[in-house]
Amino acid sequence: MLTVKKLDTAQPRKGPYRLWDNDRSGFGAQVTPAGTITFFQAYTGKGKRKFLNLGRYPDTGLREARDQASEARKLIQSGVDPREARQEARLTEDRRKAEAENKRQLEASRGSLEQLLATHLTTLKQKGRTQRYVDDLRGTFERWVPTSLLTCKVADITPLDLQRVIGSAISKASPNTANRLRTFLHAVFKTGLHHDHNPAHVNSELSFGLSMNPMDAIPSQPPSAATRDRALDFSELARIWTALPFAPGSPIMKAEVKLQLLLGGMHFTEVGQARWSEFDLTKSLWEIPANRGSNEAGTKNRRPHIMPLCPMALEELKYLKEFTGSTPFLFPNTRRDDAPMSSTAPAQFVRNRLRPFMDEQDRLRGITPLEPWSPANLRSTVKTRLGELGYNSEWRNRLQNHGQLGIDVRHYDRWDFLDQKREMLEVFERRLGNEIENLK
Image (cartoon, rainbow, N blue to C red; front, side, top):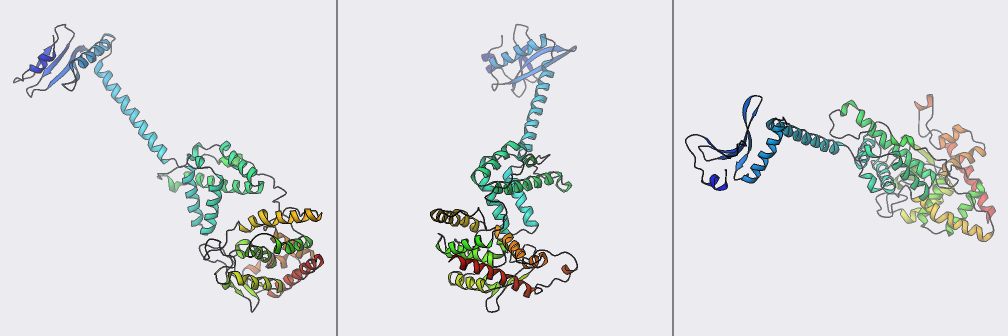
């Protein structure tokens, strides 16, 4: 019988020899000339004498070796070669580890929504978008998309997940905000689709696993009354004008609303990000550059534009210069003078301060409040009211620097049409001034 004492006192010889259990089970241990003791189970398989290695002593104890030998004999009795079974088990384990590693690598390569956002914003910058535009989009994304979704793998995000995001924007803001968010998210996932299917990215270590755009399943929302595009009439403009001095809020923000109207209803990126260096108050001219630099947009169509300054606009600019003339911008950021105000600031001022103030004053006077409006409506307001005053669409488009079609594009001169622009703005100011006088 093989015992621990026998194993401990076994001495090496010139050649290897075996110590056996006396039960004819085939279990034993081999001692090499170097003194190494290895347990084995002897058996016959396919007509050949074979030995199954059960481990070295003392790393493998005698009891453990006996248990292994007993399990091996059960396999032999059932017709299974234990060496082949062990080899198959090792192959199975190797395959399992390989599959686990492949899965780990695949999981690591599957991009999260946060990574997709970074990819999308990088793509926008490569296409020439300003840093401010990119930062505004990032802020919109971070405001509405929860962190739990940002860390999700893109391929695991479902339309139902996105439905909740858009639903939150509808309930907390407006359908118009939800539609803008939907458009942005659709563009983000489109970037992921193009990334995965771009032949140039075949060997990319990052993929998003998209086969469709999940935003396709989310319908856009009909605009709400509070945010639909509308043109205010002159009487409404006069009510706003006379309410502004008394409304809560900074004089700078109030001047922005007035100037966005008096400067032809130009885009916020043109008015709100304007620099004092662009204005010649002596010559009554505003020269809008095609581009202002990496952080501020110029004209929307990237063509320089000249705007005449009429009396009411000049008066408002001179008043504003007392507050911000020492800074580069007409409307500096509240946190730093070397940057323009946030693109959302005017709309927030109108929505949160001016309109509630006007509604309360109208209620006290028994007057029907104005239908909801926003600074975004001022552009269409100017264009509509000028049409009402008899100016055709070509003149109005020239004023607001709409892209022109045809031969005049090749011969574009920013100084062209200056007298006509001045005429339209002067007529607009006179009509507005008359309405304001009528309210006094």
